[in-house]
Image 1 (cartoon, helix red, strand yellow):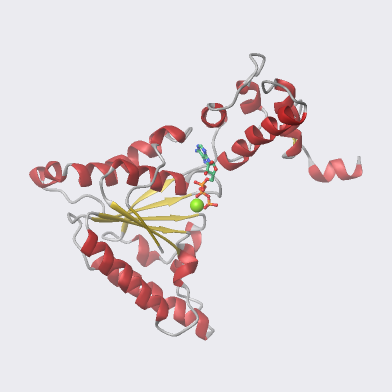
Image 2 (cartoon, protein in one colour; image 1 turned 30 degrees about the horizontal axis):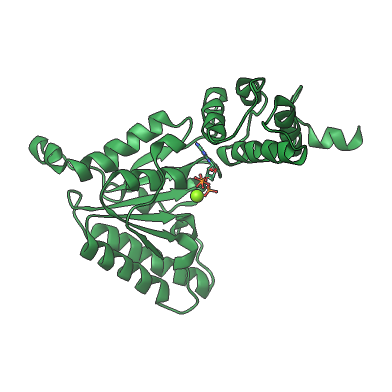
Length: 270
Ligand SMILES: Nc1ncnc2c1ncn2[C@@H]1O[C@H](COP(=O)(O)OP(=O)(O)OP(=O)(O)O)[C@@H](O)[C@H]1O
Ligand SMILES: [Mg+2]
């Protein structure tokens, strides 16, 4: 378990998720920073926000950035850390997590990769499965144990929303669901801009062209392309990264600059 006063991540290092950033700001940042707005109008802000979507698209990044913008304490726990060997141990950890969050409030509890504890309870056959279920029950009870208007918020993240127990998604628990999809071409361009901000790039570099041929790649892949391009430039002792380096980097992550995604199977028999 990790207790951080405030993560370093900010919104400006996230590319292509403007809509999602606005949604999470409204659901988490606004009620924490201006609770009176909600009191005066008389509505309850969401208690929990679930971020879901494919791997490497910026879910963890987004949760950290929203915590940065509030003055809340930030507690991050990864779902698998709550899955323990001994009976009752996972549930105890969850109880302690919520107790500490209340004591330290305002707090954002971030349960990353929540599917490890939040999978549907229908097929619990082994004693291990039953132990995970007990942990999940404690998590549901914990979420019920504080007020919507209170100063504890929960953010969950998963790339398997399809297997999550429906009880987690009921009103009063994760009542705001935000999808974080793979980036489109415009999104890829803004992610590439973020990751090349600190790089020394030659004026011939055309990031829009890189964005065009990287269909299907996520933010983590695009970051890797920028780093690889930098490595090519270093190996050749250049003073700046050139378009050629980007083309080589794209090839290295399994794409063909001229054709877009490489057909891996076709390539094997070519
Ligand atoms: N939208 C984005 N903008 C900028 N960088 C990104 C973006 N998405 C991913 N990245 C880069 O990829 C890294 C991994 O992203 P992150 O950990 O947020 O993905 P995730 O959605 O939580 O993935 P997983 O589902 O595998 O946990 C980030 O640290 C960042 O460098
Ligand atoms: Mg993550």
